[in-house]
Figure 1 (spheres, one colour):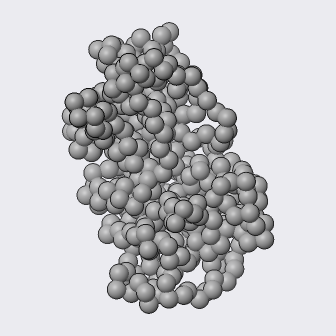
Figure 2: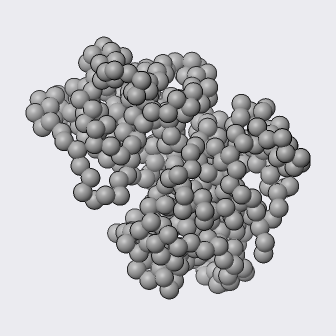
Length: 421
């Protein structure tokens, strides 16, 4: 079977190509990929090429398929897995395998397994680790976005405080506590905000900072209603507009500090301020992933000792985190559509990935079986184009507060130009 896929050959070297997939083995599964969300981690891998810890040394000779936030349909099942999976079933995939100590991961390491493809072969270790996860929803974009949600779910589950009486760790966010998400109006910040308002151990108040007013306005318009329903107070602050953001932020905690802080930006100054506003026995999670292996920030070890301030860092989620995300999505308890600001086809992947850090907005959602330039949802809403496709997508967006939807996806998949085969 032939597939169209975007493959990595080396640093900043991506090619969209058609090539033949081998027949699957008894312990493999053939899938049709439908949707893939482009992740900043992919740009990091593309920027580093073989120097990236997950990318093979011989990627120049044996290129890998990029994309690790993907969903689709199971098309063929090797005999080993026929009793576990169903042909025609929808799936999501957790790429953080850590299989027998290996760093190999779909979207980074495999010649035939990645999200930016029309068809892919799922290797046996994915099924052995139970990381090919069935999805019963009507759409594909939510299942694709379960991977980034699994990352913030893992981050929130990893937060902790100590119990001084038993010398044990109490895991998760502090129920009814005060939480801060710094640099929190990007896609991962929105996902963290969304999950924190939906989980069992939800805070009573979340303070979100961001330096871009447009992103703050968008987050407010999307999540204000949900915050009211969930009983969580959302407070948005642009530190650039405040003379002393430290004092103002602390006032929202009664000047005692935050119980939980997620830092979503790579900034020494932000990390140092986050440490200052952390409460006694509070937990700070440096969520943003730096590429500079010498990146550092100062901490006050006096405070670590006497104020029991805890610092952690998390990257990725696991299969259980993804299952929780999928279950919550199936019950409409999360709003993954809030993360999406652009859509495009497989032929938009290379340029979009190479320039991902320069393209404003949130998640760039790719439908791998169609041909379409990367297009912002805002541009579609503002378009006066005579294109029937854009006109109808505009109607779907207007019905849903400018957000992507199951109806818009179904229409696009039927009416867009297929990717050339």
